[in-house]
Image 1: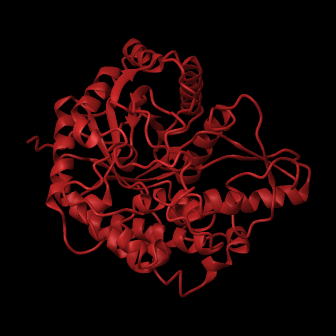
Image 2: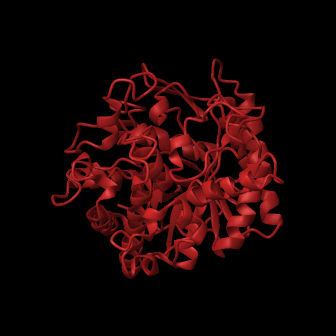
Image 3: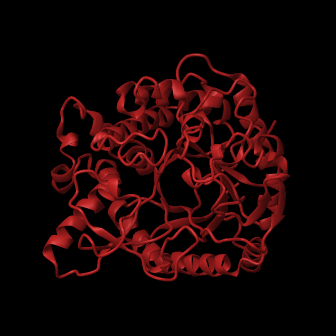
Length: 460
């Protein structure tokens, strides 16, 4: 067993590179080694919830093929491997009994990564809440935040000697608002302002876990946010600007306000009055969150252009902004296969703004694109990655403290409510195999990292 921490936050002298995956999207083996059910197991079994009617029960079978996958990470020349840990594998009921076989799996994964010279970066929550906790109201129940902190310490006690960089949550906006307001992600609830309640408890869980992890010696702890720029189509329309501000508050400031200032701002409270409820937001909650992150992760795919209602077709995430004034979302060309506009300037803007707003190191923890891979010659994806890497470098040159760029994703996988219909991987996975075949984007990235000698960028 490797027993030395070999992963630490890059110093920023050069841009570190990595690739990312998530447990439910690649592991499969949902009924093996004592794993409990997750909300995504339950949600995917609901007719019509997932576009192709499939689930993550096999996915990429990475639970059994993780060494093959880590060989691919090493081959592309990336220094970081960002992965998530499945809460139901570790604490099958969410609280109580710990499943050592789950910890053993991540032990093997981390050791195998280190043996290949990779720096493992662990995300504790990437949406796969144990179903047993959802049965007790999930993230609408304050107890779930406490349970998350307990689970975080169980994982750290096993892996903390070898994993140096930790993230608590991945995209808590999706978990809260797509899961509890819009109902398009697990657990599939459509309860309007419940998304605000879930958001607060996710933040509280982060704060509780951060307090305990820092006390245990963790120095590089962050949270990963899918922040987004919102651009009004008519910036001279005061109603549109005001409505856009409300959406920005729910997407971005609901996280950054507590993390930086220890408060929810007045503009957010105007559209999310639930967050002014003292039974929900108790004394000390936001003070616990303030200053709790050592770095901030930014997941970026697309900007959002707002227009007056009716100016464009209804967006599938329209219900994910409860309390905000209605707007339309205008999507310009070019678009990816999932229908998202391609505009790398949004990433540059977001990185500059986030660095200035937080005063913290920023990592691009996910960036990539879905394209229909009828062939392995995915030139559109290469162009997307090239432009967004260039935007990241421009942000650094503009003074943003950006330390890493991590590609989403290594493998074509289970893309949540899209099922297997959208492919983001730089490696094609044949679901019948599941055989791995690197795409042109994989080879382009390997050449880029080799030619610039910037793959690792970490301090061993």
